[in-house]
Image (tube, rainbow, N blue to C red; front, side):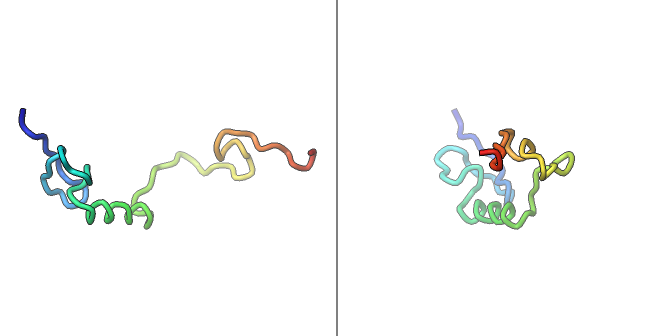
Length: 70
């Protein structure tokens, strides 16, 4: 069975999947370039609408107890 290859998402170089510690990237450099893209907000996950920041359910789905009544 032959080794499977794929294209590095950063530099688009063909790279082997097996034995590649940086997969899906070809190198640590390409992995870090991609990570910097996320930190720099070059990549974003689309959101349908702005969350209601006053509604605690919009944040993580858990209701926050009303601390004034404790």
